[in-house]
Length: 305
Length: 261
Image (tube, rainbow over all chains, first blue to last red; front, side):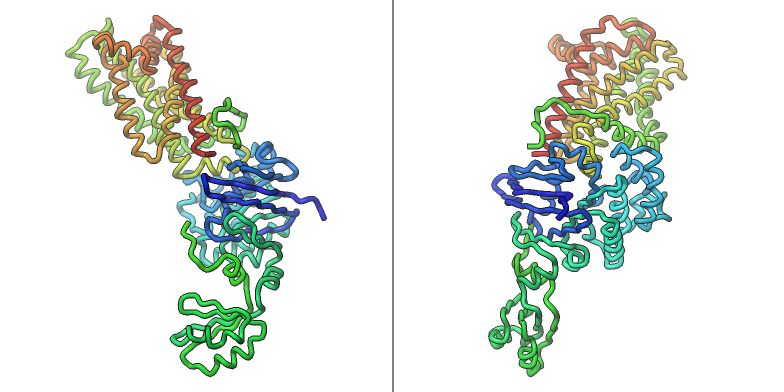
């Protein structure tokens, strides 16, 4: 196994009495995409901020490219690109100027920056917007410019904190395409997300975080196989709720959320036949997915943080 | 903890791209910015200098317009640096999250605070240079020593920017800065011998006036603008240096606390 490009070991962080990150360890190999999923307040953003030396851990170690963080964070950051949850583009600058000014922060030679600007604008599908200011861009364009800006130093590792939150499906798909492109180029990515389809599509490995603690780790398919039954039958409609008790014996597990009943099953046919006799319900039969896994591991209650 | 809040400043050459960033934004808005900055002192000069001046005659052996114009330069410098260190720095720090995005690059908070302080001083010099040009054109003063006042005014800008960044680090919103202007800057303007000599005030107020940074700035800048040498150099220089160093260090400590607590 090659040396990991990024490594966190036994990281702890408390804010007051609130434990935000609890004994978290992870590794990222070169060219790998590691997804961190978890409810709001699970500690995802704090973890990223500790990776960048912006928050000091109470205990534990962070190493990027073998360099200890925060001690040698300046050296490490030369090889890291960051896209934060909220856009922090310079509103007074054009797209091209945003890239140029950001390149200077890395101390890059002028010629290098100027050569990269058109390439990055093309990568972000913003060639025609070089002279437009962020205020004139759509949400998806701004996110792509943020991603382009994070690439100005040609980083080996990207830290992406919810890079597609708030985007419409078209913009999200374009973003995914770009991120896959970067993975093909051999860049490593640490991605936090709320979107399970995003995690499944992009990530080689996933880490489920809740209350600052790692509660599961594995490949997307592997995790589903390990923790879930193969099929899910959702039942909704006026007569749905009594079904939960009536057919509990035909499923491995039954959950009720609002007006919907979820049957988790390995053999769906008997259940589907039984449900077929009822005409006041509707059913949806589908394979189990990451969202089911996520809800099983972290619960259905709302997190208001 | 990442860095002791009280550690000495750790400044690297990386502060410079941050200054350049602010300069680039300013260049886009330079004309309205400078016009805005010189409009108010110009109105004051015309209204008080020519209007009131014609009734007053001489102050400390100077025509009132000269007395006022030379003092106004120090005030404009202080106000320009203060404004930049409060409203503009706060926008970048809190509203636009510019500082956060800079810290994702290999630039530390210490570099940013130093860059903001230096930039505010540079901007105050731009403003003052424009006002000096007006004073030159109006013929209020054409003394060559006026140019020597520019580096000194950069130091004045550093001092007031440093103090402003202390309040920037404490601010929870723009409203807070209104208090700073009305409770600190405006009274200081009246106590620092800009509009009338300090000697006109009661003794206890004079004692306060003598330790105010704006008094020190006026004492140094006024003679140079009018083609004379300052009577005393070291005392006002030390007052300015004390505020600059104390303000800068306190601003740095409080800003680190704000970001890393």
